Image (cartoon, rainbow, N blue to C red; front, side, top):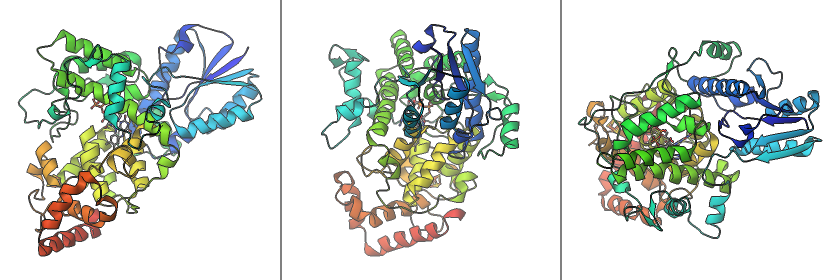
Length: 509
Ligand SMILES: Cc1cc2nc3c(=O)[nH]c(=O)nc-3n(C[C@H](O)[C@H](O)[C@H](O)COP(=O)(O)OP(=O)(O)OC[C@H]3O[C@@H](n4cnc5c(N)ncnc54)[C@H](O)[C@@H]3O)c2cc1C
Ligand code: SF4
């Protein structure tokens, strides 16, 4: 039976069972398409990394003796998957079309409509990547009001026997989150960065010639982002050996001198499936078992929680709540993102660093995304559609299933409390506690209303005041409302005036 099998750019699973046998009647189809480069303005490094990783994967399959048809951006006359597949099936006289379940709702719908429209057998297969199935979280929380990460995470620890001793956590404690909040003061040496040589000139040239709109910059042929399995494994070993020992401790830290600290930078490799979450978790647990004196339980548990916990949880939320999730706007915010989200040209030092780094590297670590750029967008009342588009474009690891749940859900609270029980907002005091940004900032982190008062401080209190109808009854916000309500009327007015002053000049901050 002549079969056409589609592989998407984020389905580069080298160990998938599809590839265990060669079959000359089966053709694998991969394509660089305008529908994918254009659904958001992506970072140039993101587009290059995807195309390079896809080309490497196609090369690997060919070397293994599989039949592969690969279309570079300028080689296919079709610009989207629906038309590409319809034409391929017709021109190639295929009897059967097979695909791997996509992780994006949009593509899922496309393939479902193809199922109805193609007059041949169509079959979907699992990507064999995640710990959980698409609807496992939905079923787990069936009938429950709250979707608590901790419950889901503990269940997965038990189910997959990760850091467990029988039915109990290996050290008697499930979660070491409280030990994951250290401020980095330079005492310990930062791990060196792993760099890879990749040639991107021809891709950059094609993107320019074809008028593909991108953001950010790309610099030369060295990259810290792996584009094949070998490089992904190298990065995993590098992380386990050098950064894992302090991963948990400095998970929430931010500094001006470095963009990665003790983070793994594995998200791109994992999200395009060059390596799987199980092998990442197992490799790191192996390292922890080998070096018990150097790697404490708080480090390994903190890391496992991100992958077995948050990553699977976000995917489950996505499939439980789409497509309505993509339209949620709990606060009804409509403001535009400030212009400096595309340049980094702001006097706010934390934002300058987080945005410039994102434009230069297509990467920011979690706390920069959550408590700097996300925090400001929320306090400034930005439309979650605009915020989503920015996050979806700027980070190389951004795919809707994990981007939207983190942005609209965790960061912007636009889902009204599905992912988080309260909005992640803070004044300058948190940013100052976790970073050295405030030390060299032209604003003062201790001031609320003076000329050089940090904008976070007044915007923070304004956020509480103007959203009282939405948040006033949230028990987790009660303490902050009590502090605000106890302030003298004059002081409150001065803070609110300052916040309005800043909002009116948000592009000049
Ligand atoms: C507003 C916002 C947007 C985000 N958008 C994305 C996105 O588009 N793609 C993406 O992969 N992650 C996203 N995240 C989650 C997280 O910030 C990134 O996974 C992480 O920064 C990637 O860097 P790293 O590989 O060095 O992670 P590390 O800090 O080394 O963590 C290890 C791994 O844990 C997983 N992980 C950690 N936190 C989360 C989380 N909250 N949700 C899902 N997985 C997590 C990732 O796979 C990551 O590679 C977002 C977070 C926020 C607050
Ligand atoms: S003072 Fe305010 S704007 Fe400046 S770095 Fe600190 S938190 Fe950011």
